[in-house]
Length: 202
Image 1 (cartoon, rainbow, N blue to C red):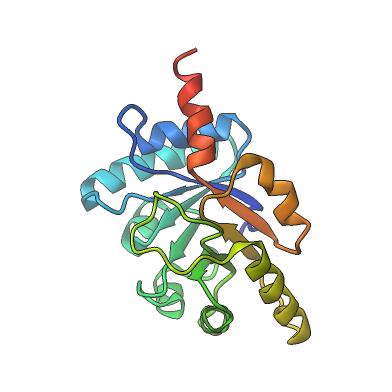
Image 2 (image 1 turned 30 degrees about the horizontal axis):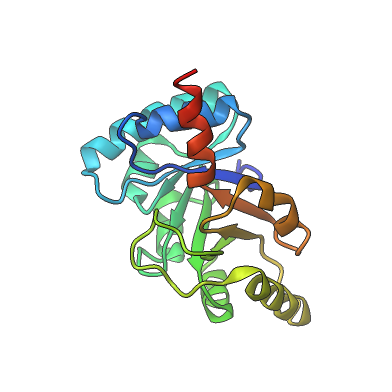
């Protein structure tokens, strides 16, 4: 059975002291609804190890684990969700492999991207970046608050209904503001990581 799409997710990143599974555990302990394991520069063996451990924590806290990009790893460990970029395996192809019970999100930067990912069967759209962020290479053009407002307006006019998750450099105190703009939810990374990192030194 497919889970509800989380409104707030934490995206892991490489850190000298906190492994990706450590970040997942700490985020779940803080009440985070979902964690996305994102290990762009790691080998499949390392991703599998961290993802399997993160899934253990997700199930322990009854939260959602999302795997970035890797369909094979998501299938092997039985992850709750997978997130795919525009240049990754297409969502409709992933659906054939993973089945109907897994959440599949897709990346978008423009209204055209949203329509494309929606046509491929995305359950939600990760739209961004909100602002410049150092956690992602080859960054797409900045969307910003005005960009979100315009896209939400266009979606309403076209009667397009799909959850939009804001992503990219979002600060903790901006979550409420963005939710008021008609966005379904947010994905955060660096802002929460600083908090998690501080906790390990208390």
